[in-house]
Structure formats: structure tokens, C-alpha cells
Length: 290
Ligand SMILES: Cc1cc2nc3c(=O)[nH]c(=O)nc-3n(C[C@H](O)[C@H](O)[C@H](O)COP(=O)(O)OP(=O)(O)OC[C@H]3O[C@@H](n4cnc5c(N)ncnc54)[C@H](O)[C@@H]3O)c2cc1C
Image (cartoon, rainbow, N blue to C red; front, side, top):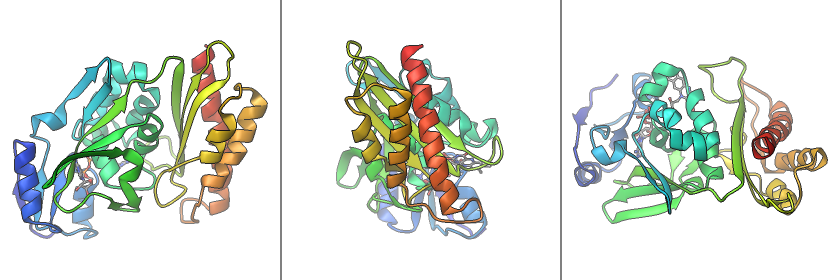
């Protein structure tokens, strides 16, 4: 590994200053489960590593009943998974947080790092997207908020400007009668990255039983996680019958632009999108009706 300088700021303002003073050559470090291997293998070089774990704001989980849940960007996945608020209101995110690596990895890995690393297969990102999460970003020009789906722009690339970093992720309160689920396919049960991941959140009209809101996000089938817009539009206004779930799963494939690689062919990934979308929606239906 090449030598680099290291700084451990205690405030967001200090971190912004450090990152802005070395644009291009400085990188934030949260859990380091992506960054350290990348540095060791020479896939990235940095002049300065800015360790953001010591900033209190980045380590908080905060619930406001009116507005929702704010998860600090450096909170390790194990705390996200164990949060009763996440388990109750954002079950897809709970599930994904228990899937990232192993329990040892989850004690280090953060959702902020998962998002900023911008792997198309990142398990935390489809659940954040279907829960309507926003990224809270600090930088030299102040603080801004954008939908999570606008953060990754391609494999390993984000829309964060030089000097900017993620402070937190904000998830709005889900509407009543909403349930969600996340599912992925990996050849091994753990310590493997998703060949395909699917997250879905559905809000039901309790009177008619039809879908008031549907969000479906796919991972590992395009340069960034993507929404399955045709499937969402098809299901909206319809009840969650087997026939409608099957049709929505077929339509979800339209959003996938997979590649063939050593892990799976594009054709197999398209097949998996259909199977996993149907199973994820079935799991959501069970939560809503069970
Ligand atoms: C053995 C192993 C298994 C894994 N399994 C999975 C898996 O199953 N699913 C999965 O999705 N991932 C997996 N990963 C990848 C990794 O653990 C996750 O992506 C993790 O969430 C990264 O978080 P981190 O805090 O460790 O990020 P870091 O390594 O600290 O950072 C990752 C990248 O994001 C940047 N960054 C970090 N925090 C911020 C911030 N707040 N603002 C802006 N940029 C930031 C860093 O500069 C770096 O480029 C695995 C990794 C390992 C080593």
C-alpha cells in the first residue's frame, strides 16, 4: 500500500475543510471495508484519508415522529440492523443491513460507505431508494439534500462534488399500510455480493385493497441501482393478486441493463430479476396481509 496522510476531524466543518483543501487526493474513510482493500490492491490512490467516524453527528440514529429517521453516514450496519425503528418502519433496510458481508464486516461497514462506494451491487442502496431516502451532503458551499438514487452515477462514481461528503441518510415516515422487503441472489449464503438484488415497498388502500404506492428498485443489473418504473406503474391502483405480481415481475425486466461477467450472464440476471421481483412482492404482500 502506498503511504498516505491521515486526519481524524471531530466536526463536519473540519472534515469539509480537510477534503476541500485537497480536492481529488483526499477521501473520507468510514468503516474502511471497501476503501482499505482498494488502497491495498492499488485500485485507488489517495494523498489524505479523512477518518469521519469520530464525528458525533455521523454516528447518530435519530427519529422524529413527524419527519422520519436520520441515520448518520458512518453508523455501522450492525446498529442499523439492531435498531427497533429500522426493524419496525423500514424492514427492507433491516434485511439488507444483516446481509452486508459478515457480522464482523457489519460492525465496521456503514450505509454511507455502501452508497458512496457506488457499487452497482450495493445491498443497502435499493432499500434506501424504495424507502424514499435522501442523502444529506456537506461541502464547501454548505449542506444540500438529494434523493439517494441521484448519488451513484456509475460504477465507483458519484455526483458528490470535490470536498463534499455524506453526513446522513434521511428516511421519511412510511405512510400507513406500507410494507417492504429486500431479497438478493448470491451463489453463497454470505460473504458474497449480489448477482441481483430487488427491493420493494408497497402502500395499500385498506378499503379497496389496491396499491396506492409502489416502489421497486433493482441492484446489480445496471451501472447504478435502478427503479423498475413500468412495474411500479402497472401495479399502482391494482390489488396484489398472483396474476398482477407475475405481470409486474415481467415488466421489471424492462429496467434491467445487465452485463455478462464471471458471476452471471446477462440473460441469467434478467431471469433473476423476474423471479426475485415476484418473490419480493409476495413477501411484501404477506407482511401487509399477515
Ligand atoms: C468481505 C467483504 C464482504 C462484503 N460484502 C458485501 C455485501 O454483501 N454487500 C455489500 O453491499 N457490500 C459488501 N461489501 C462491501 C462493503 O463492506 C460495503 O460497501 C460497506 O457498506 C462500505 O462501508 P464502509 O463504511 O466500510 O465504507 P469505506 O470503505 O469507509 O468507504 C467506501 C467508499 O465510500 C467513501 N465514503 C465513505 N464514507 C463516506 C461519506 N460519508 N461520504 C462520502 N464518501 C464516503 C470512501 O471514500 C470510499 O470511497 C463487502 C466487503 C468485504 C470486505
